[in-house]
Length: 126
Image (cartoon, rainbow, N blue to C red; front, side, top):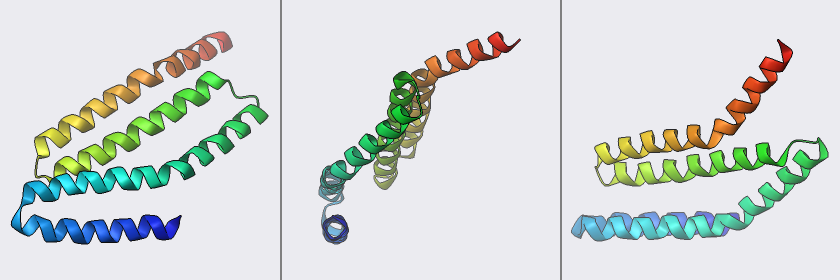
């Protein structure tokens, strides 16, 4: 798995650098394609990690809602980070900033049920 990801990343980076010299737009599109390929190659490992973490969470009695929320937050942060970096690579700082803000808002929105649970727990202790 590691050689595939590393090989695809190095070859993709070299191709993008070569293509960007003559056509920055096509280089950017190739960069998006390389990111998609690398994400696909990483998907199997990520799914394995998620399965293992789910087993651990069930083993300690963690509510599945809490676990699912944490996984969603992690997924949102990864996707937004990659998207923001692609925008920065395209020299679109404003769009990248908007992606960062939107990602933060989505994470907070997704985590609201956890905040509610914590507040209920604190209220129960008082």
